[in-house]
Image 1 (tube, rainbow, N blue to C red):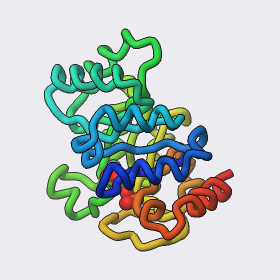
Image 2: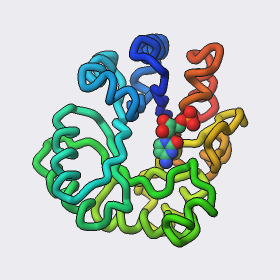
Image 3: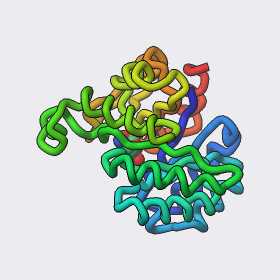
Image 4: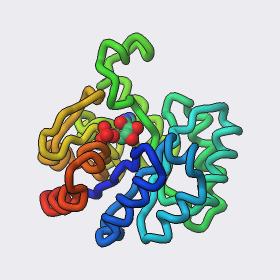
Length: 228
Ligand code: C5P
């Protein structure tokens, strides 16, 4: 299991400070750059993080028409990030087009599809997608698998079922992690490290429990030790 720390701090300086603080673990850690940082700090910031030796997950959750998504995917691949994501609900044509356009890259980033955001509860999700999270996340995962993506973003509670439906090697990346049972905040389907391990999750994303902790380095150390 690998750990991805979400760089969701309010300023670039704070994010860089955190990245520098955790630098000792750069080769074991992934950093997640999301909307906020990317919109504000852009490619220059991504490059600075790469230069520190980290693997980068660009969490922009692309959702658009197939051609526009594939154009964006190519630009993302040119940035040299190691992983990015798209919404599975963009549909099979869009997912296939993205993967087709990435074929020309010798070393392309991993591509994951978002199934159901971990902030959804079943009721809210059903109002939009008409099905339970469990059922729809499975369907989205199968679609992503069939379209040649590398894995999905899901909650810990769907990981095992998704691997059964697709393949053991199909990556599951799960946000909503509260490593040692910390406060769930706005997340609905949270899990701790033990549950993530039991559900054979490949990547955990941890945001607030790390960057809001008193000693982020110690927290990361503890997490890395626990998942060994
Ligand atoms: O602070 P916390 O650990 O809840 O942060 C989770 C991170 O994962 C946030 O950056 C959030 O945008 C992201 N994320 C999520 N659910 C998804 C996909 C990404 O919470 N399905």
